[in-house]
Structures are given as structure tokens and as C-alpha cells.
Length: 187
Image (cartoon, rainbow, N blue to C red):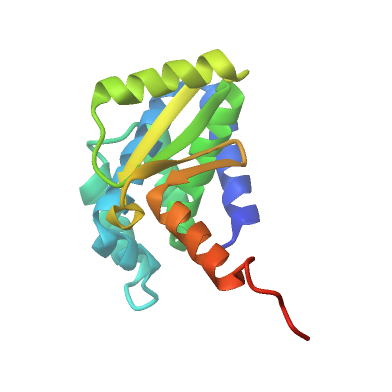
């Protein structure tokens, strides 16, 4: 049950509070940590989304897992979510906060998908080329591997998609054969 409006509002409130207390960078680091926890542990996400587990138990679990690892502002925010029965939306709120932080600081997310892992030097040269050829100054590169691409890459940034994969080329060739431009179409 996704609710981007609610997540955006809570994220904005947390960002405003962090700005007020001059802890934006610290809260951002906490959100990156929580994002990692949510991605690495599906059990954690299931626990916070479970209607069977009581609010008190969720609060205690979050305290045990997070109290020593995140700042006081972020910890109190997670406890507020639990007390308002909004812990279900924590993964969405984390993503919304990171997006708002990136927008505030002019950081653009770029997703690179390849068939095999690429070296750090290739990633660095890609970032440098994007900075050189676009108006983007700050780039946060996220790379992932999808073997079904066979070769090449897919690059996504600012609602742009560059698909230079072998799999796409093969789909294009298949579409040309399906269309078969060399036979007259009889109606």
C-alpha cells in the first residue's frame, strides 16, 4: 500500500526539522543507513509492516536496532511514526527524504545497469562525461548488474533512458523480422 503523498509530507517535516536544528547532513546519513537496512533486510521491512506485531513491540525492536546507530532526531522521528501507527511507511519516507535532500542540494541520481560488473574507473569516467555533456554538477551513481542484457548498458537519469544493450538490439532485429519489409502485405 504505497502512499507517496504521505511519505513526502513526513519527509519534508523531517527535513525542515533537521534544517532547523542544523543536522541535515547527519539526518541524511541516518536515512542512507535506514535505506540500506530496508534493502538488505526484507525481514525488517516485513516486521514494520506487519499488522500482527503490536506497536509497543515494534517500538522496542526499533529502539534495540537503531538507538545507538542513528542521531536523536531521526530516532525520535521513528518513534513518532510508530506512535502514530505510520511505521508501515518508513521505507517510503526514507526514499522521499533522500529524494528531497538530493533536490535541495542539486544531486542527480543516475542508474547504470550492465550485464557484468564494471570497474570504478569506468564509473568515474562515465560520471565525468555526464558532467561534461549535461548541466548536471553533482551525480550519485547507482550501478546494478542484470545478466539478461547480454552486453552493453542501460543508463537512466532525469527521466532520460539510454538503452545500449545487446538485448534491445536483438529485440529490434526480431521486430524487423516479424514485420518483414521485403514481403508485400496483402489485404
